[in-house]
Amino acid sequence: MICYQIRVSGRVQGVWFRKSTQQKALALGLRGWVQNEADGAVLIEAAGEEEAMFQFVQWCRQGPPMARVDQLSAHPADPNTLPHDFEIRR
Image (cartoon, rainbow, N blue to C red; front, side, top):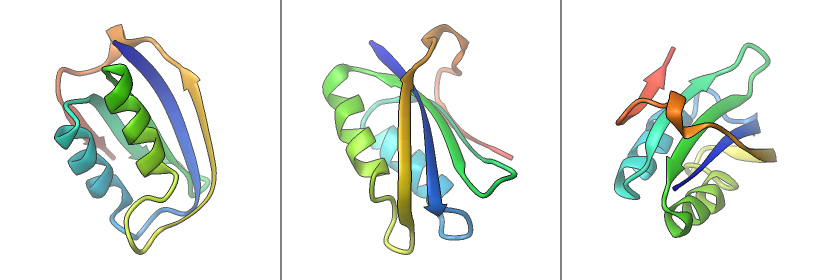
């Protein structure tokens, strides 16, 4: 299992990014969370099998149809701090 903290910026708030992220993560069998940041970015922590995480990060580079991703950064994170499902945090 691998885990990443992913920060996505661009037009990523108000375009169903969090809900779409949750749906994609659950479809890939990932666990973790997603939340909006005060600066307009979206922050994600997700963990899962290597191939599923690769697909997830690739999806995050585009996001849902109304989003525009200008920048994405991904860094290793600790999977032990994640919930057992994938939640949207406020």
